[in-house]
Length: 145
Image (cartoon, rainbow, N blue to C red; front, side, top):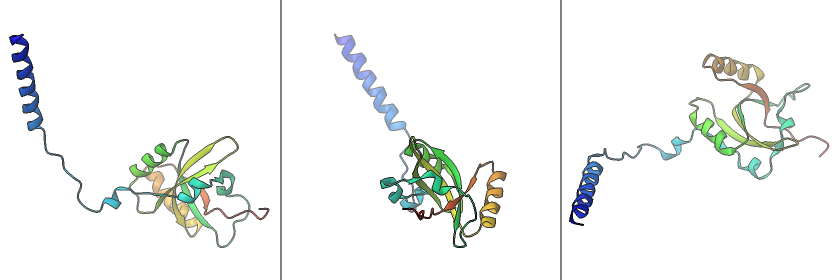
């Protein structure tokens, strides 16, 4: 029993010594809001729009804005992790959309005032090996509703 007690006390002393030798935890300085490099569209979380509203088809209205879809994910955690990993100079937004079978979380870059501005940004992203799909932003309500 005495050997067990000595062994146990030695094990605790070693554990305390190792714990004290660990580096100190550093708190990140700066603006805590700067940690998140994206915005979550809360309205679409409550009421997701059909994914078809984001597609470019036919002539675009003169007041249309454009976006680049950088990712499409089935889980919000996947979308937000990807959005956090990006370090871009243009706003990144995570939007919830639905198709006939399920909900999706899309990571967008934008908005852009013109297709040309969006295409120019898309070319720059491709040089950084980031894939992007041109889409309309924000989706306009359809007239039949």
